[in-house]
Image (cartoon, rainbow, N blue to C red; front, side, top):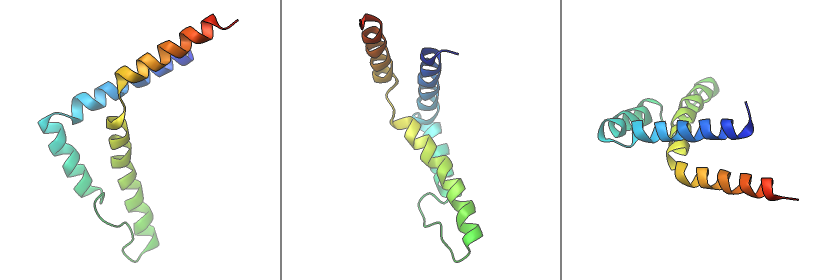
Length: 90
């Protein structure tokens, strides 16, 4: 798979995350994940193994939030612009 195909696949994935999590139902699910995955609380509760486990759960919510922060239109424009510049580079 070429770099551009990978990039466009990632852009499509970001758009999918936005379609799922930015409507009312998705927001309810995201908030539920935040509660269930200890996102709004400290991970350390006295036991290091529990802390490690909770951090793994929190990481899932962090990943979703990171994906929602991306703008697929701007990413596509960035890729296209840089690809064109790369092709025109002598």
